[in-house]
Length: 200
Image 1: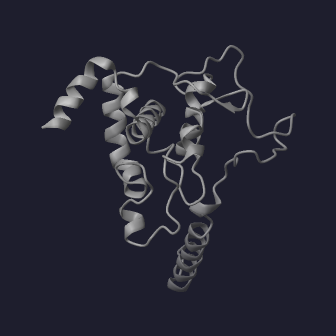
Image 2: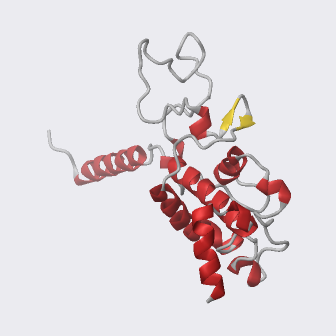
């Protein structure tokens, strides 16, 4: 039994319509069939989409349990001692990172009159590191501000690793000492050399 040309045409039309219909049945990328973090789920008995960690799981890499090192705080109070020894290498690294990230606003001496302020983009300027309040602030305070930001200052946690943040804090302390030191702070053996240099 042969199919007429009209029947073949009708069959082709139905087939084409079915193909077009099925290609229209798709999911857009913005509507993906997945669980979104912290959304409830009826699939699991506990009603949560997040699954608990497998018993015995060991965190690797970013446990950040040392709050003094990673947050600059112990018992939610800023620490007053750097979490590692300060060496010349640490200070040089701190100076390098400070010059990159901090000096545009705080300037090279920490007076708060960096290029951003001088161009009129930051009014009022950041506070000088040399005011009494900041000279007496614990080192954990500076670490916390670098990590979380303060006022117009954004946080730098993504740009500056924790050890480099501490190096910057150590360098800020050096800036504070350099701008507020007296001759009595200089070791006696070096004072004589200073006196010779001053006499020339």
